[in-house]
Structures are given as structure tokens and as C-alpha cells.
Figure 1 (cartoon, rainbow, N blue to C red):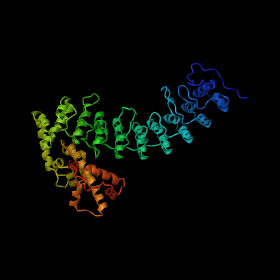
Figure 2: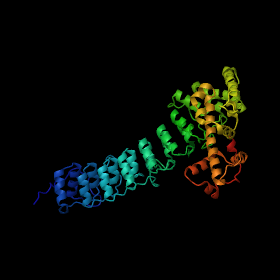
Figure 3: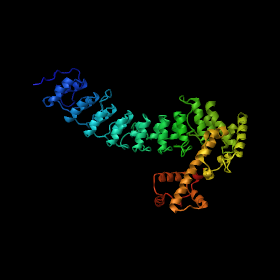
Figure 4: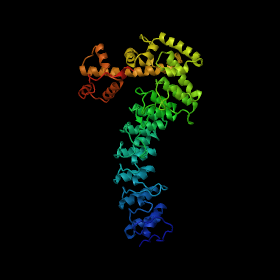
Length: 501
């Protein structure tokens, strides 16, 4: 007869069942697992029915033998406990956050600890791969801990890449690993999924791109944008562009501004544009602020907007330091010299002698813009600033974008207006791309090339938003004629003034 393990009472033990008197055997069994006492464990497991032990007993601290074995990284013990009937989906409750095995499902615990072999074992024994605890699935936890191989295993085992009732795994990946985020997208993660990140009832919904902006991670931002993430999503009272400005990240701001379809002047609430940010706050570096403001102004943000305080741009910025307000005031002078619209109240602020020499320099460059044509077309750089994007896009139909859209050369040629010209050209080339795609759609519908005059009349009924939508659908291999059937290409659509902006 084999020797029984010692049965002494453990002083100070908190392994007490709240409803039933816990056996001394149960206490000793738990202690043996925690201390990895192989000798005592082997004696317990050889003939467990002779001891007063419940394999699925939950302690006062809401842990189980299975969770303790996982914490000990004891694969053989985990396997033996499962063979003896341990419940792999036993849900525990939070009582104390000090120990990692509290408030964890066995699968979640093994995933958190990066124990791939144990994860495989649990999955083989019907652990619920999509179980949710603390608003997270095992896949979200794998992403949080950057366990790439385990994440792949979970997805291959049926883990939902876009769960509806928990934190999105892609959200968790954003904060840790570009490669993990890229893999999730490859496996079908929705880059435009909306949900909570912390699951605080007071939190507003977010997107993966918004999280990437807050993390100031341009690489992941660009990855998401390349996969068609919505750059114009509005989060509460903020646009994503304004959030990027608030973070103080020049790179994040420029990544968004370089998106073809970014709406620079969009607002989520009246008077709260990307320009209306408290630039005085301490986390701003003066150089960052100057670069951010310059980028916004070059990209065409409207200086005529009224802030949420009811102030025009002059009143809003006059209380700020010279480093911050100088780019704004100089931009107003540039607009004035180029004959672009600025309201009279704002113009009054730059009428004095302070900006006289700068105004003269602007006028000289404006004259140079009038004299210089865009490559071989009869279209000057001055025309570029004054004509609608639609008209410019039509003129650019015969222009090679790679030869024309070179930011460094443009800024070198036009030291004051180069940024404005670059962003204006970039928007026009995007409109050109949409026009070319619409032309292809029309050919698919009519099975013939329509006369230019007819095509231009059709173009007039399509806003940039319309054309962007068609471009997306055609890119998704949706037949052009089907678009007509479902009403996407309705020739009776009213003329949209946005086309001429």
C-alpha cells in the first residue's frame, strides 16, 4: 500500500470554500500544485478517488486546480487534470487582482502567459476559443501580449477576428505590433470596425485608426489607411485629423494630410476644427506646433472658420506666442497676395507695416506662379490656386503625375507657396484618378467611348464623394451595370456643389 501524503492542517490558508467546509485534502492538493511538489502530487493523482478532492473546486480566491497548474506551467499536470474531468471552461469571479490566475478562464490564462503547448491542449479538449472575460477574447489577449504564434493558432482554431461583444483584437494589436495588426487585417479584420477599447460605459466608440493616432504610430496608421480605413471618422466632437493635432505628432498629422480623400475642413462639432486646438498646452514643442500649423495651412484648412468661442482666427491665435501665431498670420498674408478669399475682419490684422516686406515677397512669387505653366499644358500654377479641383483635374488628364507631383521640387521652386501648390495638385490628381475610373465605368455601361462633351456633362452630376464610392465598389469587383440597377449611378442625381470646390 502506497504511503499517503501528509495531512497536516495548513495555518493561515485562504483556500476555504464559502459554502461548504473544505477538506484538508483539498488544501494540501492546492498547496502541492502551487509549490510544484511532484512527490505529493503523484500520490494524490495515483488514486485521487481515495481523497476528499474535487477537481473543479473553486477556492475563496476563485482559482482552481487547473488554473494553478497553468500558472506553474506544468503541462503534464494540466493534461492529467483534464483527463480527471477538470472543466476547461470554468469561469471564475474577480476577488483579488494580485494574482494572475484570478479572474481568468484557463484558456485566457494560458494565452496571457504565452504557453502555446497548454493553449493547444486546452483547445483540443474543447476550450471555448471565443469565450469572453473582462470584455476580451483569448485572441485580444494574445494581441495585447504580442504572442504572434498563439494568435495564429487561435484564428486557425476558429477565433472570431471581428467579435461583436468584446474589444476588437485589432484594437489590441494596434498598441503592440505592426506585424500582428497586419496579420489580423490579412485574416479579415475590419479596419473600420467601431467599438470600445476599455469598455467603460462613459467611453465613446473608437476605431483602429484613432487608436493608432493616439499611439502616435505612423507605420500602423499608414497600414490601416492603405487598407481603406476611414480617415474622416468623427469621434465624439473630434475628427481624426484634430486628434492627430492634439497629440502633437507632426508625423501623424502629415500621414492624414497625405491621404487623397481627407476632409481637411471637416468638423465633428461647430467651431471645433483641426485648427482650433489649444496650442499653449505644455506637451507641445514649439517646433512641432509650427510644423503642424504649417502643414494644416498648406493643406488648405480654412482660416475663415469661427472657433467654438466665437472668435475668428486672429482673435483665437493672438493670445499665443509668436512662434505659434506667426505661421497663421503669414498664411493670411499669402492668401491676400494671391487674391484668395479672406474675410475683411481677418485681413485688418495684417494691414500694418509689420508684414509689408513679407507681402512684397509674396507678390513677387505670385507673379512667378502666373508666368510658370504646369508642364506642357496651358495652365499656370496661379490658375491651380484659383480654379476648381474639377477644372484642374480635367486639365491634368494628359499630365503624368510622377513628373508633376514632386513636393521637394515644388517647395524649392516656390519657397512661399510650394506647400499650397503641392497639396492643391495632390487633390486635383486624386480627382483626376476618380474621373478616369468613372470613364471606365461609363465604357462598361455603354460598351463604347462617349463623346467628351457628354462625359463632362455626366461628371457635373457626380461629387467627389460619389466618385470615391464608385471607385471603391469597382475596386471590389462589383459590376458597373449592377451599380445602375441599384441606383448608384443615377443620372438624375442633383448637381453637387462639392464637385467645384
